[in-house]
Length: 506
Image (tube, rainbow, N blue to C red):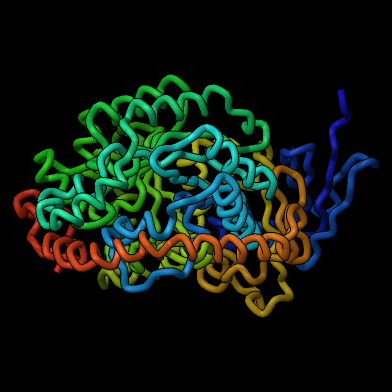
């Protein structure tokens, strides 16, 4: 057997989130795992590699609770766009992707995340008209090549967006309806067969990339499909991830279709449990939160995307009070335009503070930082392995440069990581005991080469985009008036009378 590789990280200041402190300490790493954190001068085997961490603050790698790798080639393409318009634009923004495009898009996102201190992500990757075992392998390989961990969940549906929103199809002219039909999704059995094939032959688990299942939005999936996703998740022991109550339109559609909230509907089918993650949850009410908390489920709170798409502000305090496990995510670069977890921590703190004057309800910096590390780790199904700097956990460590202007002066590490840090002081990043970023430089792939490839790809995709863009422009007029009109309806008042008041429900 190969001898274990030992590394000792000396002279750094190790973050203690709860105590708002960062005492000097040494960390002993064996292979990919932290074996000991102790006083400076910690005994280490003579053969151990020494890493100098003087003038560095060491924090656990941030964990992105919700992103979409296909969004990275579409970053910055849209502004003033609702979630429903984003869904309408997906053939234009993310269509006609080759296998290499899927790999490249994933590679760009993973590169951005590790350079900004994020070491693992829950990625809901989309392929059209259905996921493929080859596509998922290519997307997963990009994470492995960067050296980043991922829980990769193919985003699946068998009902188009236009069929999923009650009354929307009727608003389309016959010619538009015909055009929209061309973007029909695969029958659910075909999607299930591809997911099964991917799960069955998955080879990237040893590289830190695992699979999960993501029925994308409850009412975009037939009941049979949701049950088939649940069965896959049980058979293969994977997580389940779904966009639930992200927008008010979704909540109204849920009531019109099922006579209940989307969370209650998912629960009635047996999907809500400790392996279940809700993305966004902006419009969850008090009963929904209690249900998720009672079942041990998670929510990925994605404040940047929630505001950019005009969906509102999720009630993180309500979720925590209801014992929901909360993680933090960036969402995809096609609708939040970056993959910066520091920015989303700062936003998670800030948006809680504009929801009302009761200071005790505001989210504290330690709650935000716990959510972006241990909370997201649990959502990824890795809560016992990553998200903390402790003996027995994987050595996923971010080295912040204390000489950077963000840290002059160094007053309170927990507050400053959440409120001051923006990713620019990330000096080095270790994942599983291996340096992936050193002195602000990505070591695993050539960023300049990625940039050249991305530019060629962008040019090619832009050329082929014209028909999908023309269709989007025609659909925008309908969707852009019908969906906001739907969202202006009052919600079921009886249900909400005793529930949480949403600061955005005016």
